[in-house]
Image 1 (spheres, one colour):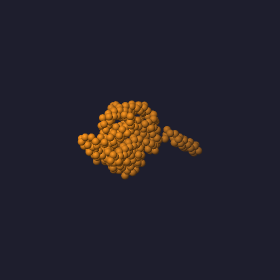
Image 2: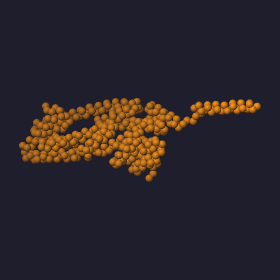
Image 3: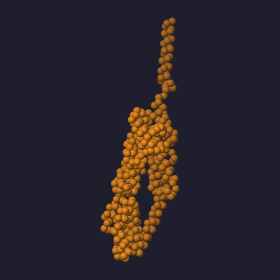
Image 4: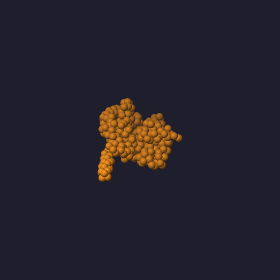
Length: 402
């Protein structure tokens, strides 16, 4: 009897152990871990992204935590950059014909190319839009070339007519701008640059040998350099260039220095704009700073634009998920400029708060710094609803009280 009971207990114990082992080895009996749920959510978000369901992908990426949190933020930055690039570019192409110019279309082309670099097969047909922009650019260039050619012909005719009437100053006023645009332009059997120099020289003799009225004009021409300098100081570079090119020989050396300044300034500003559009913020900042060294209050406000590169780079780094670098650039801008300071403080706070969340919400000091920056932005009236940032950050901003 006892032997029978012992055998029964053995069978029961063996059955229990088998059931426990089976439960441990069978996924149906194992509770899913939070990391497994997050991995699955991330994989679903990536699938949505690859299939161009950006809204669904974005909603899922926002919820990803754990080991894939940084990657999710990078995908969100890609989606944001892609949408922004297409929005800006299509906004330009949708303008009326009167508002379109070659430089704005060139910028649209750059933005379409930026979107294609992010996702070549992305939604909203970026390749087709890029082709449309290039075709439109070609049309605008053709119209501009035709208009420029017509203006060149008109200036040449007026220069030749004034020359035949011995009105050399008037001839120079038409020949010199023509030479500035195209030195080798053939006008009346002469190159525009030579005609400009010749008419300028003849204009001096014209003033010295004619009537008292002309003599008075000669005396007033001694202030030509002053007039050119005044135009330069007023940032009317186009007028200043023409005036500097027409000054008497005795002050030509001084005029040439100003012409060199104008050329270098405009070259630096153009390089800054080009680098800025290409996202090369360090190069753009250097170019704008070089322009400011030539003329700090020059056209286009180079000092302000150099500072804006700090803000632009900080925003770019934020949406790329590089929150530490973003904080450095945004802080530099917020300390140096007041123009867009509320925006800078908002994204500075958002960068710090994102780092706080990604590091496990353990650094209380980092969170306090973040909330202080967000509070500065909110007190200044910055509207965050339109900003494409994490819902957790927006909620923290919304909950701020003074």
